[in-house]
Image (cartoon, rainbow, N blue to C red):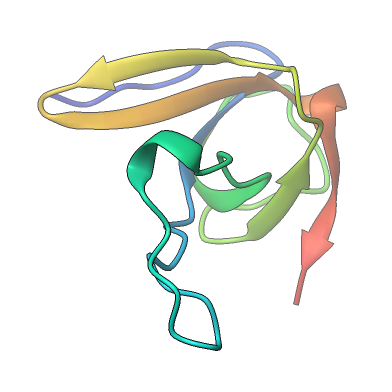
Length: 86
């Protein structure tokens, strides 16, 4: 299944966080914080300044989580993207 966002929306796949810290402590899934960056998979026709494949940083409490197939994605408004990671 393919998902194409409409208007000023962006489809994001969150970056995976490591399960261990630099010192070797294992972090359980229940205490993980969802990352605030991800890879742009698809963009709507009205989005400017972002391209497919960019890694972006977004605000903490924004977007809508969806599940397509067995993967979880995030749909954001273009204005919720704070910047690009290069």
